[in-house]
Length: 129
Image (cartoon, rainbow, N blue to C red; front, top):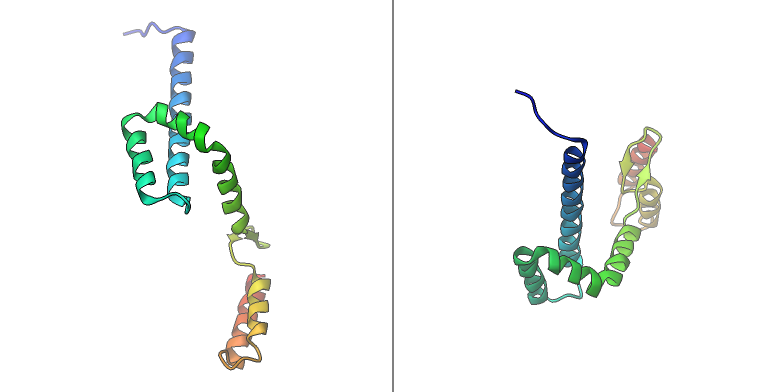
C-alpha cells in the first residue's frame, strides 16, 4: 500500500502542528499570567478563564491586546525576583551560599542561633560552594 503524499501535504501538516503548539504555549502563558496577577480580582480571572475556554482564539487575541503591556512587565518583574546560582558542578540553585552565610553572620550575635548552628551553616556553604 503506497501513500500518495506530496511535499506540500507534509509541509502543511508540519505547519499546522507548529501553529497549534504555538497557540498552546500562548494560551498557557496567558492562563499563568492571569493567576499570577495580584491586581486582578477573582471574578475577573474567572470571567477571562471562561472566555478562554469557550472562545479561546478570540479571547487570547483580546487579552494580548488589552493586557499585553502589563503581561511583559509582570513577567520581567517575576524573573527579576528569582535569582539562580550555578555552582562549580553546573547545578542550579535559587539560594546563594554567600547570602546564607551573611544571614547567619547577622544572627551571630543574636541568641536565636547557637555557635554550633552558625558553624554548621558555614560548613554547608563551603561544601556547596
